[in-house]
Amino acid sequence: MDAVEALTRLGGVARAKEIVDLSSRGKLRRAVRDGDIVALGSGRYAFGVDDADALALDGVISHVSAALRWGWEVKWPPDRPWVTVSRDRNIAPVRREAVHLVYADLGDDVIDGVTSPLRTVIDCARRLPFDEALAVADSALRDGRVTMSELARAASGVRGRAAAQCRRVAAEATAKAANPFESVLRAIALEFPFDLAPQAPVVVDGQTYFPDLVDAGRGFVLEADSWRFHASQQGHARDCRRYNALVLAGWVVLRFTWDQVMHSPDYVREVLAALTSRTAETRSG
Image (cartoon, rainbow, N blue to C red):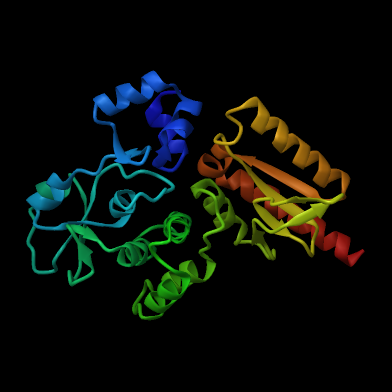
């Protein structure tokens, strides 16, 4: 695959090796040369966020575009830049078409033309679907620029129609999710009556494993079979050993591909609904 598709699968931000493992060094260089991907420093790359649209509208980079600017992984890179302008701005319709435009108060939670990390998470929780907002929040916690206590306080202060989702995102967000793929799978699984813990330890024959999502009470795990870890033969073999060990120990293991989670969530729901029915029957029996 080309470097742009590889970076999309990796959440819009990744290290060079991760992109090269799915693509090639030459394709990465070509994407950087063409301006499709930009270097963030320290060997990390991301989709570029153009300041020009925000500056032209006298606004700031915000929402998913701000998340990428902070170096966070997201479910989907935006098709257009997200820009927030003050409420009193009057933007002609033709100029709005080039961006995702949001009218809001702009205070001291803007840093160098970008919404602050905490505001970025809350803004995304206000506007995005739950799974996309959760992916941003998980990335922010993983990065360390936002803490769980800060996020909880900020979400508790939100009023209006978005308040419930902001609080839900804050309650469910975790730094343990390795990437947006896992975040989105967890968002889907939260629709079901499970007690899932991300990256919870499971000990089998003295070996400790950390499956993506674990319901210890019901004895099952959900795995996001990531392209990132299956790019090498060694990584694939390690994953297969873990899968076999868990199954032999009596765990039910459900594995989902990136395409299934991202493009066919209804299939994931069908499988989880079947698991719910099976679990209920087992308990009643």
